[in-house]
Amino acid sequence: MTFTETIYLKLNNISPLSTDDFSQVWLGQSRSYYSSNKARGLEASTTALVKLMNKLTERKAIIEANATHPYILEGARNFEALAREVGNEVANRSIKANIANRAVRDMLVKIVAE
Image (cartoon, rainbow, N blue to C red):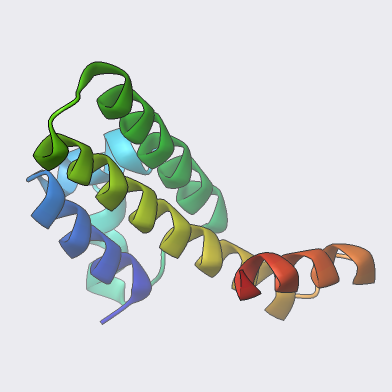
């Protein structure tokens, strides 16, 4: 199972969604992006994962701004945890791909370690 599939399943457990919605709303891609990648065993692009992080943190902020009940606030924490998991993947990809200079890689390693 790919990282993207794992994230889709976790997000679907928090807030049920179709694969089309995952592709368009959460990853910011075409309707069939996730399904096509899944069929070919490919991961989502780093750009799509950053868009996903943006959406997850936006959803967390919306929930926190409009809710006080602990059960609902737990949902916000779930979105945050998922955003952190995606962030770790983005950081790890950046480190492995050697697309960042030494100072940036060191910073990313510190972020991942936290």
